[in-house]
Length: 418
Image 1 (cartoon, helix red, strand yellow):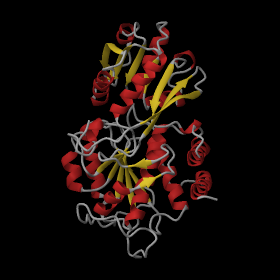
Image 2 (cartoon, rainbow, N blue to C red):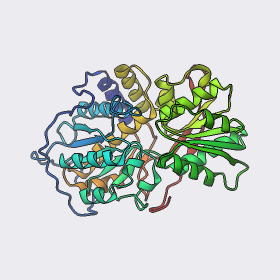
Image 3 (cartoon, rainbow, N blue to C red):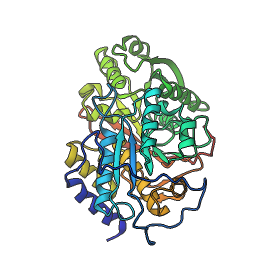
Image 4 (spheres, rainbow, N blue to C red):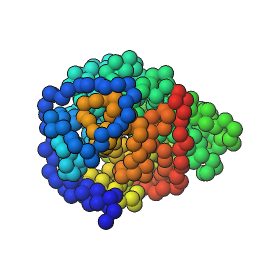
């Protein structure tokens, strides 16, 4: 049995186990980790196959995100995916012979909340961090992140946070394709379907504003144009004006969070508008949580890093089975991204042979090639620290059943590119 299938079998068993973790609580607590940063760019030598110092502290990863109930836009997907990863890793012996510890610090979309959460997380002396799902919230943290010198694998697609970008840091990586690639592939989907005039509806935050700009750039040199654009508040509950303004579009690209997307779909249906809608990671959240249903989602499309429920790879199927057994639904892409972020941090620590030398862990992440994830067929850091290099286009029907209509390879991004 090959290594991938062996790990997949372990994952199925791990997914059926009872978690010792509760939402929002620390797993295997303890804050006595040391915090040696090491050299800025040391070689990632040592590895898990060599002798491990028995005094090496247990690995600790901190997740920076909120769960349902802490904010109207918060979801459990990231926490759920991370908890499954921790359970799997510990079922396979932990990290360097000790159980992996995991804690969550609630970090919201507000930059002030995110900074407070990051500083709290740093004080816990973790081996590594994962999180910042929105992206916008971390745009002002560059100096704090550089000073902390702790590797972070993000679960957002904010291109400004990439290594060398204006808000980026050498200490940050991302499991998601960058948003410029998403915009380009949304336009490719539009061309495939003959949607020549795109409307745009987005949240009036960095995500929506940047996505709008990326879409406008992506249509250059194609037969697709951008028509009406609307940016709306995250808390908006009435999108009537925006929906009616966009009704003459061939399709509407939605750079919005799940609640906004759901409101858009509902009000389009109420207004008798059946224009196709294309969105990103919010789409499976809307469908899986039943935020919009039936005819409201019959023309719903998405460009995603993955969709575990219909990915046949053994590691993905094992993750989706474990997720469904534990949480009662198919695993959404956001859960898979968090799951894989935790796994890659653990793999980097094994490769580096340390849980405390952050420089060596970062270097190991830069060198790591990992093919056993739940979301991507291969993770490998490009010069800008993007780890993911594939997306899929998805079409939903009125029952919420998804199908893959296209697959896109994403080129590497140079350091500092945007």
